[in-house]
Length: 83
Image 1 (tube, rainbow, N blue to C red):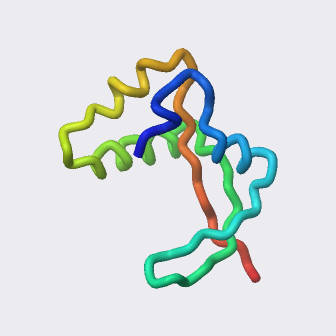
Image 2 (cartoon, rainbow, N blue to C red):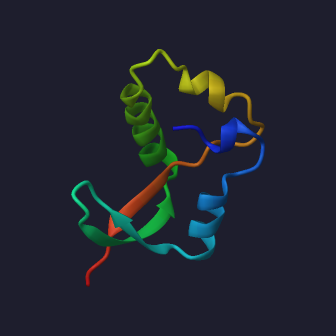
């Protein structure tokens, strides 16, 4: 789940979502859902980052990787939109 190789620049997919937050995700099995992207902030960001860190079970230290960047790694929320 690398973030642009943990390089300084934000990844292109995040820049695209900032410019055009309405998107479509494809779920396992091929089902498509309309979503709207926002950046999590404050307590929501902290809670989601803590959850995200637990998803890696290969020993990756996401906090150490994120520390390589001078800017904070964004946490993106994809909320379903009403069709």
